[in-house]
Amino acid sequence: MSQSNVRVRFAPSPTGGLHLGGVRTVLFNYLFAKKHNGTFVLRIEDTDQSRYVEGAEQYILDCLQWCGLNPDEGPGIGGQYAPYRQSERKALYREYAERLVAQGHAYYAFDTPEELDKNRKEIPNFQYGHVYRSQLRNSLSLSEHDVDLMLDNGTPHVIRIKMPADETVRFTDMIRGDVSFDTNQVDDKVLLKADGMPTYHLAVVVDDYLMKISHAFRGEEWLPSAPVHLLLWKYLGWEQHMPQWAHLPLILKPDGHGKLSKRDGAKFGFPVYAMDWLDDKTGELTPGFREMGFLPEAFLNLLAMLGWNSGTDQEIFTMGELINAFSIERVNKAGAKFDFEKAKWFNAEWIKKMSGEQLAESVIGVLDRHAITVTNDDYLVKVIEAVKDRCTLLNDFYTQTLYFFEAPVQYDLVAVKPKWTDEKTLFFSELITRFDEAEVWEPMQLEILFKYLTDEKGFKIGDVMLPFRIMLVGGKFGPHVFDIAALLGKQETVARIEKALVAFNAL
Image (cartoon, rainbow, N blue to C red; front, side, top):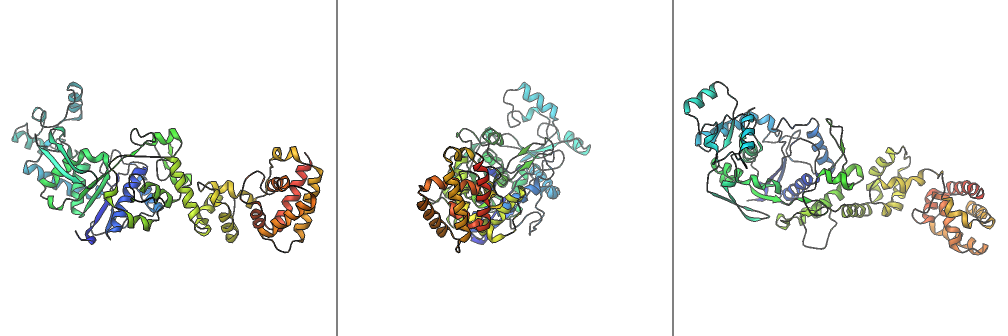
């Protein structure tokens, strides 16, 4: 296959928030497509109207945009295989379902939901398949006359695949190698529902064929469906066009036992969705990585390392580096444990890696939410550079930068009180005079001036350095204190010392 023929797709159902496992599926598809100069397709699989959630499709599009994983074809974008919503393609699926019936590979089933529920209750491990299908109401057990009559009368029915008995279905997975299935273990899946909508099984095969999908990467949970899909490709005569498949490993709970769910996020206090998702029906808000303060670059970086490795010790990757290094063969078969502490490490590393200019827009967003208005972009960039190594999440920029925009209203007096003396009051009064007279306002010059006065007054540097920091920021935190003073400027630094002296002397 030539590189330009690579076509991959992400095909989510608009039923709720986008789990980080879904974003990783997007990412691996995207990386593979870009590495091979291929096409990344977004297809919305909205055939299950009972589970459709208003706003979920736009939410998916917003998530992909935030991550920078923009499709080449899809809803709102277009492409030569439009439409890209399965609900808008409804009419074409029945043709293929009917073709399968005519060939003897599928059949009409007229059983009501109540009849099927009765069977499930009465028959242990009931499966609608080769063992019981002859005892049920379908076009294999009923006469041709009865079937025609029921179809003519519009009797509700579905179309099911007729799974063969005693066969083994095989395929080669790009991650797992040779995989085989016993057809006796697979039931006769519904292909076309009573409302005329296809199920995932039929729609995914038809659309992958019509959209010329070359590689299908999906979660491991879809592996049990593979034999149905393999047989559909065969029965429809499209076997030579079947995409290469790769079933991606699960993202596991932190303890490694079971698939990571949003309940785990709620339990342990970390997000599992890309962005905040508000369920209109329940009012439940599921937090997202974006709102918690993750950079999209860090989010994608950490997802790439969940189940894939480059074969090197490198952990921090730009998108370009990921594209160059990515190989589906280096995706692991085993599930990957999610470690939120490691996720935060990735974010901290990316914050360090990015410049103040690159971070400015995100930080402004954080400050805006706390009603802090930035009026000087150059000043903001310098502030970001001063504190970014101390930030793990973008939201940390609020606490780490607040004192650069607002003078402290409270002081850590407990840290000052035991050792505060009249001599220190005199020291800082003199420091105000020296600062007022300073012609150069730079960190090194301020430190020299401060240390000179310390020696002159007979103090140890530690005796006056902590009070000085608390005067400027309110507590025992922040970057190098002379860097803070330099950024605040002479007038503000002096004003803060004068204000703090009033509070300290009231001790």
